[in-house]
Every structure is written in structure tokens, then in C-alpha cells.
Length: 111
Image 1 (cartoon, rainbow, N blue to C red):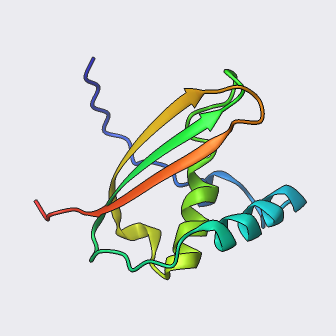
Image 2 (cartoon, rainbow, N blue to C red):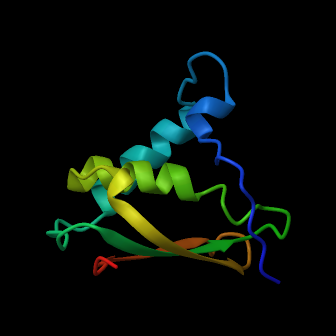
């Protein structure tokens, strides 16, 4: 199915009123991500990203982990996520305690 809508996309920043605060869970996640991500040099922007999230709940939305993960990536590697022009996301269901994140970041040739 192909759908094309002439609607301006709404950003997450515009979807919520007022300031949002990081939860304790987010602070723990951010610290763990920042020490776990390897010290590597990114390719030149623009970027294509691939995320695979191993989630233990079938009820989890595929896109919920995208923004916190992406924010940690940009904090670790010093880029702006507006330089991501293409993204692929896969949700996998795994047993509780076997959750994981796989990430690939590539240079995207300009069209």
C-alpha cells in the first residue's frame, strides 16, 4: 500500500506542551549507552541509520526506542540528528532479559 498525504509532519517537540524532563530510567539508559557505545569516527553526513531493537514485549511500539537511542548517539558522536535522512527500524521479540540494540550508521549519497 502506498499513501501520500499533503500534511506537514508534526515533530515530537511540537506535539507536547511545556518542558519535558528526563526520567530516572532515561538517565540510567543514557549513562549506560554512553559508556557502551564504541569510540569510533562516524562517516560524513548525511546519514542512513539502521536500528534493530530486541524487545521482550509484543505490545512495545517499534518507534518508542528510536528517539532516546538517537539522542544518545548524537551526544556520544557529536552530530545533529537532523543529518539523518533515511532510517530503517526492525522490532524483534525476544525473551525477557535478552533485549538488545543493534545500530548501523552509513553515509547516504545525496540524491
